Amino acid sequence: MRNIKKSINFFRNDLAVYFFFALLSTVLMLPFYKHNLLNAGSDMQFHLNRINEIYQNMRNGGFFPYLSTYSFNHMGTPLNLLYPAPFLFVFAALRFVISNPVTATYAGISLIIFAALSVTYFTGMKYWDKQRRKSLLCALFYGLSASYFEVIFQSFDLGEAFAMIFLPLVIYGTYSLFFRDKAEWVLLALGMSGVIYSHVLSTVIYVFYALIILVIALVAARAKVRQRLQSLLYAVLLTSCLTAFFIVGFVTTILKTHLAITQVFVLEDHTDGLGTLLVNSLNNEQLGILPLFFIFLLPLVWRRLKTEAKVIAGIGLGTCLLVTPAFPWGMLQNTPFAFIQFPTRLLVVASLFLAVTMVNVFAVLQISAKKKLIPVFLLPLLLFSGNTYLFFNSTKNQPLINYQPNASRKMPLINFQVGSKDFNNLLGYNAGVGSTDYWPQGSSNYAAELFAGTALIDNKKVQIERSLQPNGATFEVFVAKKGKAVDLPMLNYHTYTVTINGKVVSYTNSKRNTIKVKLQHGKNQIKVTYQPTALLVWSKYLSLLAALGTIWLLFKKRK
Image (cartoon, rainbow, N blue to C red):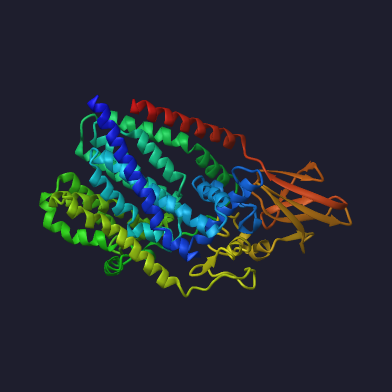
């Protein structure tokens, strides 16, 4: 009976923590709701167009938008097969219940903050064996970190922000396989699946850190290594099944078409000098002032830290050095690491390891009294609020996009703002970041005419009527003679059904890598519809079955 009461009280306390996170993530966003403007980070227009595609699909009876037909200039790019999309459905769903699109967007960001706090707390409770204060402190240090603020608001990189939610699960799940009696391989699979369904580049980075933990584990040569590696294999297999839908869509799309991949930068050019990192952190940017303070404090308590805590601190500090020119990034330029684009992305991982380190330092200093802890709990909140004030102050003079962009008056790539009345200006003509990502190679040479919706009839430029539908488009073309060919302003990824006046016809690839068909005399109603392959459909069912199996495993483990 006592154990039952203890479990009930513990559950009530946990519910109180999650309620606190919900309240906190709402209160911290109140200034943004009042602001009622979206300030463009480099990826804002890109992600808002992706959300709009999902929203318009749902409005028009579709479910999953394989193609981007309502956004990205209606070119039919299969962005959601190449960039993970599932968590953006939350933002799209909010558009149905919140009429103001700016408020709906900020509500989605509030949910990201809530999820980051909750997942970090949940993971901390496992790592620190249900020590609530340590777990709560770690959640605040990580979920409200300067790195997270920068990713969400300054870069507006929603994919990376989603991935950061699952980073604690990836790190703890890998750690538990080798350093805990209970190997949490299901949590590792859930975490890695969440990352894969969030952000491809983050997947590369997080796998690297999981491998670091694996190497440390093998060097430490703990008992039952073979059994632990078996658990790792289970995690890999479950992750593969859970993410089969995205992996199959990603791989088959790339294999079918020679694509222009996202831009690869010179890694060495996107590092920060140690002095720059220090100054920015003192301004509570990048790493942030709180982790920096504890880095300076570390030498005073180093001898009193346990070996495991020292390794965690070492990984955090080592990651900070990785983003500087001290690391020879040039040697990795022609490896898969080049796709991370910016070495400074690693700072989000450093923020988690340093959050754990800060909690460990507090434990060594024996700061446990409630009166002493309250100011510590308040620090991340105050610093987040301070960043909010500085963000508004630094962006107040950005130009307002109160016009409809076009080829002669383009929207700035970054450093602009848009309000609820002008929100749809972001969703029309789009020559911004990601607007030609994953186009067929060579198509970008015709970007201007394709953005304008220009068709070619016997190589003559014409404007034709176009209506949009989920995963497809319908074009109206009239010609006086039979046999003429039309090159449609819709990119060709080789998986379509094309009909003219209701009759299925064949299509070819044009010089622009768009869909080209021969016309009948008179009026031609050309309907182009994406057809997912059987392999993609089966992979979707495999992922759904794996998700149901994972739920069963989690309930089984709780019994």
